[in-house]
Length: 192
Image 1 (spheres, rainbow, N blue to C red):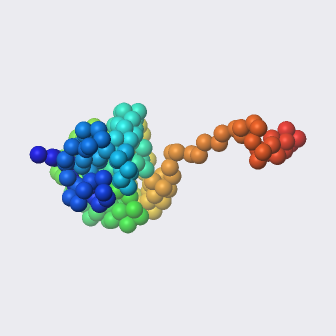
Image 2: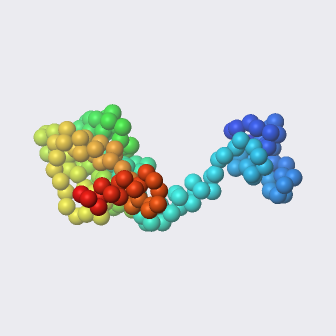
Image 3: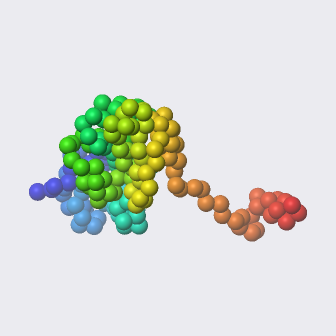
């Protein structure tokens, strides 16, 4: 019995149903992530995606960058007095495309903070009675001890910019000598 779902792409390499019959070339089973070397159009390389994901998780020790985290921030309340403001903060952040959760449970803020730290959530936005009255939030980042009091608008702008900013920057490689299009650039670089 095959536990892998059928291939989402219908092509001759899989047969009409994307079945799990042994491949005639390698003896491997054909399925959604099949032996695509048999000339089919299926070009899904799940193993490469899994390796990249595993490498990222291992490299960051589960603490993914803000823009890549599945839950980017949690809005937590100190007391039930701030519940309506917490929902307003969560709605504002979610409307700007951020992945947000709210924690309105009747627990101590230290417990909520520790829970989110262990879950590797990058940002905790704390809302209490004072923050609700002033229209602010207290921003805590994972791994840092300091809190930052921000207006709701400033918090939204800052987190949205951070979510859109990718930590991956393009790598500029030096030109390869001997290529005709690089000779002009090399001459200009040497002269300037």
